[in-house]
Length: 63
Image (tube, rainbow, N blue to C red; front, side, top):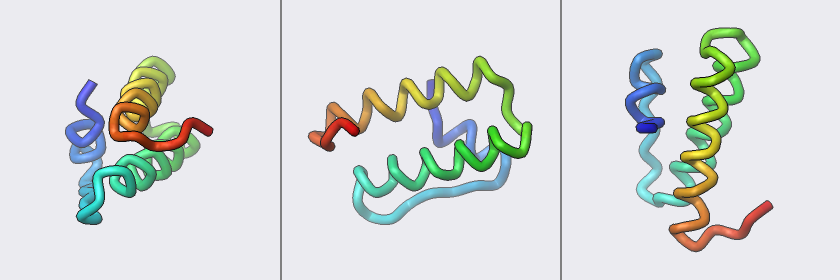
């Protein structure tokens, strides 16, 4: 799943200059979209998994 494309559908662009920070910010934005019932459950879960995988691959600490 391409999370950036999902967020872009809602006019949300994330670029901090640091890939790990981008992932954290996209995760927060995704949570907001889900809480407001803007994204479907399945789409939300797939996006969260993709972000978690990307975070691990970039060397982020697993929470």
